[in-house]
Length: 154
Image 1 (cartoon, rainbow, N blue to C red):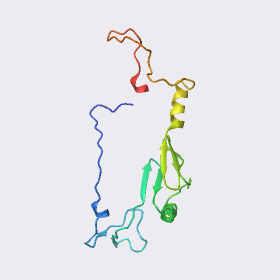
Image 2 (cartoon, rainbow, N blue to C red; image 1 turned 120 degrees about the horizontal axis):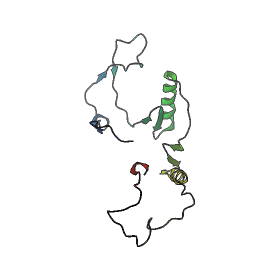
Image 3 (cartoon, rainbow, N blue to C red; image 1 turned 135 degrees about the vertical axis):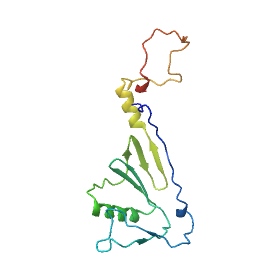
């Protein structure tokens, strides 16, 4: 699927330096909509710098949570379930066509199952691998008579 004409896609990265530096000032923030404290809606919250980060990745209605301490993830999940209807799917094994293998000292990502699914979809599941995926000694010409290939398919 292409991008409509006169539309642009940009990527921004917000640098949160206060997370990586000592906070010398006292900072107060408004309570976030939906997360206000009953009876204290008019009050602000004092910002405290955390020692480590809890990272939450979100895609549509799915969340991935990562943190060095499992207890912190459990606390976050309890807080979310208190505010939203959610299903806890446990440890992450497969997400957005990416296989996730978690060991004691490492996490590895792969796409074997997705690759096999693509090969199956295109009728190439029983193909044999080769170094050069084209006919040997093929002579190419800019005046080709073969049918055009749909580039979006690949």
